[in-house]
Amino acid sequence: MKRIFFILLLILLFFTSCSIEENKARAGESFVTYIDSEGKDIAVQVTLPKEPRYTNAPVIIPVSTFFTPKEPTFDKEFTQSTELGFVHITYLWPGKSDPSGAKSEGVYDYGGEDSLKALRDVIRFASGDIPNTNGKYIQDLSEISIDTENLGLYAFSHPGIAATNVLALYADELDVDYFVGRENPTSDTLYALELGYWDENNHPVYNPFYSYPKDYSPTIISIDYSTVQWDAKSEAPYFDANENKKLDVVEYVLSDKHPNMFGKLFYSRALLKALEENNAFESIERPENLATPELAEELWDFRETVFNYDKIKKDIHVMLVFAERDHVQAVKDKPNTHQGYDGFSSNNIWIRLNPDDVYASSMDASLSTPDNDANTEPEDWLEIESWAHTNKAPASKMIPLAAIAEMADRVHTNNWDENLDELLI
Image (tube, rainbow, N blue to C red; front, side, top):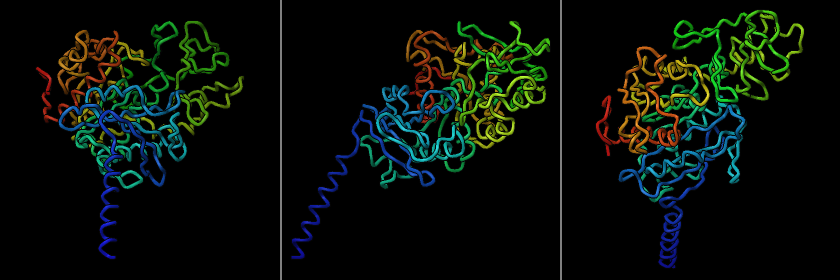
């Protein structure tokens, strides 16, 4: 009887093993799993390449949006990375759901502490450090071999805030090899487009109270806010140059593109404080949905990067990607990219401005880029456009892919030369 029981047990174990094996995702497939983050289930979507880039597949995590009106869902735009042999990993912030039915537990905090902890744990899962909620590690869930030691973050626009801050605040817990940041803002002044923006006709509008290099520093953008007032008609701040407390045609008024958090409109700490000091609401009603200076002080600390670069591990490698015309920032000297470069480079982190020409042109022959040596910058940042990639199609899709391909290949071959003569694989 015992012998029969033992045989049945072996058969059961065999079929259980087969079942587990069958449940592994195959090349080219996508699946959703859940990880634990501070007691909350966080939804993670893993998409495997049809063919791994090497004998195994490197990992890329595009960091999700959180400031824009667009509802944060699983990333769909950067899945082209799988065509280059990457494992593409995306996730949902706490409190957010996807049309697929996946949902992360928790409360949405617009890139705050809970979001950063969730991103931290997504990275830990992707790097093979922690299992999913069923006790399975990422390699247990895939038929193809995953190179968890070749892992990068990619962030377009404001998600670069979360990417940079998670690398800083949880440096000792994370194994990230590289970061590709594309046109990322860095400080509250830049998030709110207080220096300039593109108008409805895609023409640049500049703040006359900002001048480079006088008002630029690696951590602070200095603007004279002493004339700032509020225009009730446009529902926006403006710089009252002639101090008549009336918005005139020639005066600089901020655009309607600015962060929205917790039902409030946000500008920089300095601007919101200036509105109060300048008695901007002395004769008009203060909008209920405008953040107070006190709330701005409380929330901006977790949502800017300029004071966090020194906390990041020195062995990470960084590439900053940008076009001749940024998608949001209009100012000629690109202070957002400049502050990012200053922050990383001043802490002895390897950094390159845009991908090597051999990688850019490998994506499309028309996408030749300036060959900027790593760890170098323009002598005058008013000339930074000459270091940029073109805005012509298909650059916006192909250049970021060239960037992650180069960085992953550099990790794979351990080649950190300042410039490359040929593709590394």
